[in-house]
Amino acid sequence: MITLRGAGGLGDAVYMYPVLKYYLEHGQRVEILTKYPEIYQPLIKSGLVITDRYAKQADRECRYAPRYPIQTTTTYQDTLILAGIEKYLPLEMEFQCPHVFDFPTKKKVCVIRVPVLPMKQRGDEACLIPPGKLFQKIIDAFKNTCYFVLAGNRNCYQYALRGVDMDLTGTLDIPGLMQLINQSDICLSQSCFFLPFAEALNKKTFVLFSSEGFESPVKFYRYITPEKIINKPEIVGHFANNEPESELTTRFEKLLTGGAK
Image (cartoon, rainbow, N blue to C red; front, side, top):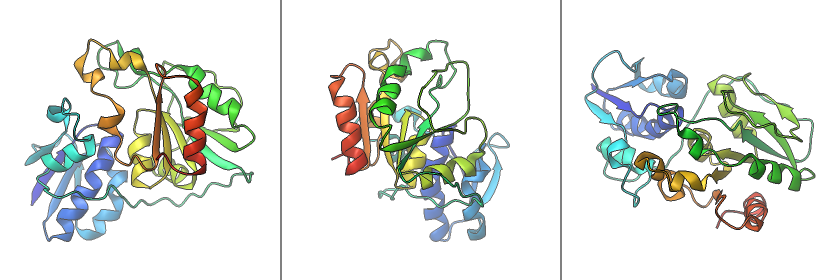
């Protein structure tokens, strides 16, 4: 049996799903050390063993941090490389959730990740949070087209977003969040676990970046670029607040009605 451990975030756990599925399909007995067993429930029937993240040493650490400075590969590609897989595996996953959302609208459903402080490591993470006015501008511009649903967990950094149609903040477990994204037409978020979820479920996503992060004295923050975190540019759009603000709604509309490219 091979024991694997990926990076520690919720979105990072999604990156491990194709890795585990690949090894299981090739006859390897696999154990995953994780904080998020909900992500891997469909693979238990294939023989996956799920163990607490800190229960033991892993045979192979698939955490992409050592490759973060390399901007020619994405975080998902880095995960594959560190897992010892030489070919590219599609970023896809299955999930189990009995809940189905009933949205009282014929508009397109846009799920917004509650803007929050990421990582909570150093105390200077605010440089990574895109300005709240960018979220608000999209809500205001597309209120007749989109039904906006707010989701995710709150922390100490909050925007008061006006015009949200449904607020599910703090009410959903992980399968519920996946189901919500799966039923959406598009997601809107900062760089966070919503992006891997949406990419793995092949859902359009628009990611907002803070240009302060690109210029941060902390190298780790500077590495969080569209090139590093976006794996499916055909369904993922992005915007940073150092770009012409007129581009914001134009790019969102292009993604909403067609594709990012």
